[in-house]
Amino acid sequence: MAIIIGFGTTVGGAFAGACATSVNWGYNPNIQRLYCLGDISPWRNVEKPTETISVTVYQESGGPSNHDVSASTDCDDLSAMSASVSPGGCGPVPAGVSGNFYVTNYSYSKGDPNLPGQETWALTRWRSGISSPITPAPNHYIRTASEGQSSEQSSSTGITFTGNVLTGTTGSVAAGGIGSSDTIYFGTVTHVGGATLAAGHVGSGSAGTPVTPLWTD
Image (cartoon, rainbow, N blue to C red; front, side, top):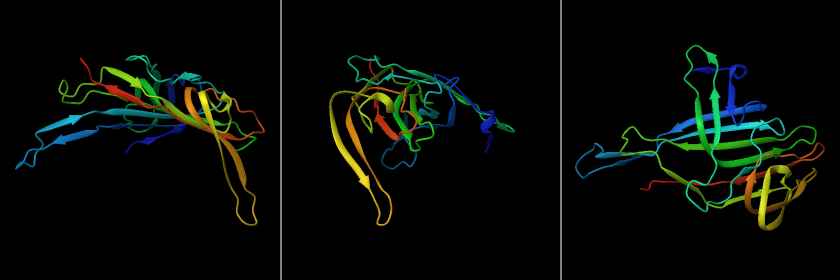
């Protein structure tokens, strides 16, 4: 296991120059093994590998803003986002990851009125398997409707709604203590990022922005 040092690790691409507070990256082979009766060895492995990056940055410190997550009306009409991680550490450190990814989730949180909020971007990309061309990378991508919620109807939490917006409330309090209650807005989301919630306020927002890979002729 390599030791990673935060002071020596940088993020780049769309996050270059932003004040990032944390980053996570990983790889999942997503293997489906096909078996035949009477044989304990797989007849064939079907791989759909994915690489993921999750980056958290302080609001208004740089990084992506107003990223389009509208539903697709044609193949490949969704925009990719460049991202990279260059880890620094002690001794041999595995190489980082870089390339174009698709946004699959966005969240914003500002729990302290005196501190800036934080935006978290979850990114995914699909790779070819080791059995390529049997398991090639997808050649098209589409996005279904993005759904989200926010404590603000404006885009100050990085969530931009379109169409009808539903409104509800949440709250909690314990005996002898102080609780809180919030109005929450729910709806279809067209853009994420660029939170601007001002000092003296608290709030949150999130959106799932599902991407579907396609294998076509």
